Image (cartoon, rainbow, N blue to C red):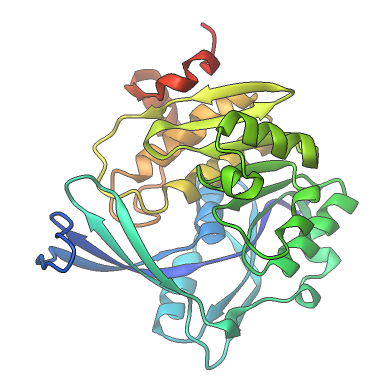
Length: 316
């Protein structure tokens, strides 16, 4: 029996959220309404979501020893996530981001920085740290390290999910060991050169032989290719205060769905619902809901879809 349901290797960050009434014109000014220091980060937030849903989780990553790092580590303590292989890097600032949130739409603009002293190397990830998992979740940063972790997972028949939003040098070493690829809407085109998302996802899946090749579509849901078939799941309409962390929570919910063996249509719908709930509060982990809340939104919620993907909607 695996010791952990999900082991995650990748980023955390401490965000300064700045709420503004609307974005000013270029070169203009606008008063901000609120400033909040908030923990986030792709893999760390996904694992918090997994833990909130009841999974046994472990985080492998690095945290700076400054004030922002203390905010991050304190946010993870008490969540139930195993932190035995989190490294506190002395004399190093934590990854940080300044996030401007447009109150009129809930959309955010991110300015981020990650000191090189936070880099994790392949040698720091051992076989036993990965082999204890049912599922490995990674991002694209520190590519040699996550590629190493993914190779260990493949040797132990542990499925790998990856959250990637841009092109990273050496990422071609990661993709052959990925089972569930869930990218931003921009990544498939950037990687393949194919502007049509249907063709781009098909090319990615056929090239790397992954179980699922998928992309999130922001306010319009998610699209996935499984067994040579496409599945489209529309997004839920909510009172959106902040989209920060929606993708991270989507990935955490998808990890939960994969561990529990949800069929793909249910997995996408559940992940969309969890992401939508998180958008109703400020911060990357503003409102990570319980499973019952997501199920209620699925039953009663209004959906927003992209017409060009309507042919891939679930058949009723």
